[in-house]
Amino acid sequence: MNGFFQSVLAPHGPQAEQIAILAWVLFAFGSLILGLVIAATWLSMRGTPRIRGALAQERSIIAFGLALPVVTLTVLLGYGVWLTRVQAGHTDGAVRIEVTGEQWWWRVVYAGPTPVVSSNEIRIPVGQPVDFTLKAADVIHSFWVPSLGGKVDMIPGRMTRLRLTAERAGVYRGQCAEYCGGPHALMALNIIAMPRGEYDAWLARAVERKAVRLTDIEQRGRSLFLAAGCGTCHAVRGTDAAGTIGPDLTDFGARGSVGIDTLPTTADNVASFIRDGQHIKPGNRMPEFRIFSPAEQTALVNYLMALR
View 1 (cartoon, rainbow, N blue to C red):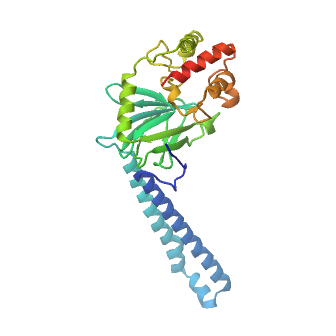
View 2: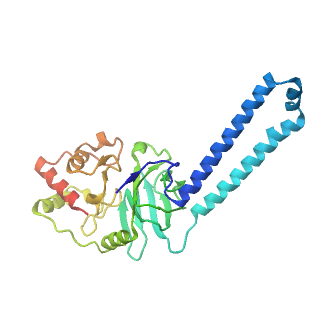
View 3: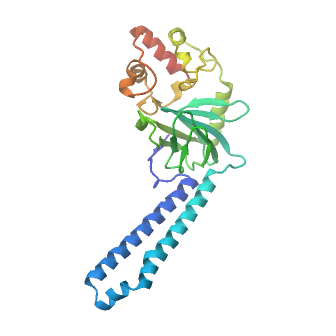
């Protein structure tokens, strides 16, 4: 599945296109004003006495120094306010997803009769509006996927909203855009846009979530996972692990990255994060687990990679 640049100027949805248009309008107005200022400066220095006198007249100052900025900024403000209201509403028939920003990861809940909980990756159907309900559990975060839409703050004790629509299948990178302490720069996320049929099939599997058949080494890894207290912080549906402090790991093996886009999901990288997580993502709240023997670590990693 293709990935796309994280850029406001590379829109792949109607909401992002509206913001890109606003950005280009701002660039155009800014360039126009810069050109007028340069021209006025040059004429005031090199122009004829008549031109310099005209520039110094009261009506010229009022027209170019007061009226033009007021009209321009009022139009841009009005369009920006309208755009904010349009992108923050809810639409009938839209997919509804709740995202909570936490230090330093994303809790994701797909609304429905049987809510589906996940973390750090968000799957959406192509061509259908998705209404996000945004919350923060600790400090102010900011949810931003530039190629799909605008940036919205996530504020503790409040609920904000955002609507996004992906026009093409692919992976869209996002980022927490508000400094939230510690490894803020490593608090990224991926939105995976899927054809509607693939999305429906994925969601149905996630809702039903049948027990995973484990090999002997994976069963040993599950026993180690529970015995070491990992389930105190993490949840794995269908097991005794029901923690809510850290990310839900039910579909961990199917995710594209370890540590929220810090490393690709491979067995070696998972093992490194368990053992040296503070080196890989300094400041994250998971302690380093160096209590496992090589064989135990291999079993634990195999179990985590089997969670899909």
